[in-house]
Image 1 (cartoon, helix red, strand yellow):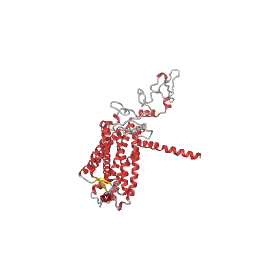
Image 2 (spheres, rainbow, N blue to C red):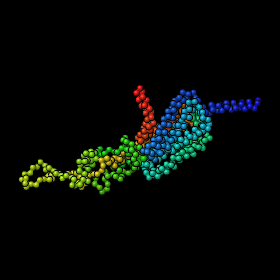
Image 3 (cartoon, helix red, strand yellow):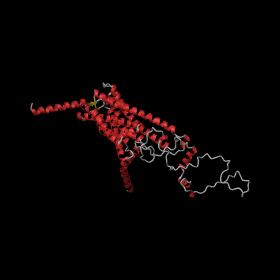
Image 4 (cartoon, rainbow, N blue to C red):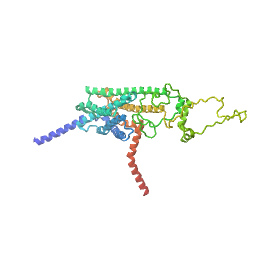
Length: 476
């Protein structure tokens, strides 16, 4: 045989062998999953589109809205960047493998995919831990929160999550292989991977749950303290409504009014009676204000501008104030001659003394729009609970998406369970990358307003084009 013919035959044999290797080691075909793959492809497309758009809007909202640009929301953006990388880059590749029931990226692409997949999972878990720690320090140790999550601290913490994830799963580069059970690239179990699994998934998620439990206990104790220092129910019904727009360090407004940006709320550890400006509460050595004084204060706060203009003010000069004249009571007519009896200028002595506060107390000069301190404290506490519930919901969604897949892998290490069950649990993990923006929109008024503004700006050119075409067709 000539050398050229021998080389051509060798090339054909090598090509045939490589195709057989691809069909053997990069195929996830099974008769039971032929029909299921269409559901997986549809689910993958939905997750890709929703996750990419939602996480991109979260990043844009942080970049364009000053009210959202806070230290705590930097952690939210870091989580959004992880999900954006997963949805825009990794998810389409896996969807393609489900569509063709085989991996088409080669061995090098399989290793790169497995590395990015587990690095993003590690960064997500570390970011969830930082979010839980920040919420705990915010309600328990505010000074530590200010030092640890300052601008310089965040510049060190956020890159550290990516560096730690890469350093943890980088040494596994040679062992990333295609796993037919999930039709994706992963690694087989080794002692090192077992240690990583315990540290990240078990220990990490357990610590996050413990921190949220401590936050719940702390917020509950603070709520009880507020209830103990709150005035009576009757007087609380007459107080001025809390001002809208109160927010905490997440930059989220609590009210439904106009979007405003205010400072971060104080820690919920101190009772309202000991806070600066809490003038509605009794201090040591100070008499408790009567209920009539509180009612008069509320009446003055609710008075209209016209009534305020006609009411004598404490700062009005004496010369401008008309003299007070009182009419003598008609129920007790005088029997003495009129010339000898001077006109009465005060009520009879039989009239019981007034129970109103002494006239030495000057009327309140507080503006009508001033919010009582306990109302602001209650609003701040409610907002703290709302943001904490949102973070806890993000954590619960992560657990709900990954725990079934982890439990199945631990219980079925020999691969005896049906392949369709492994695929379904793996597809459930995809949901975690697209559900967070939906939680922000539902449970976060500030993010909801920012999303609405971004969508309005995005679709405004289409609206103008539609109106122009409509007007042109109407004129014709």
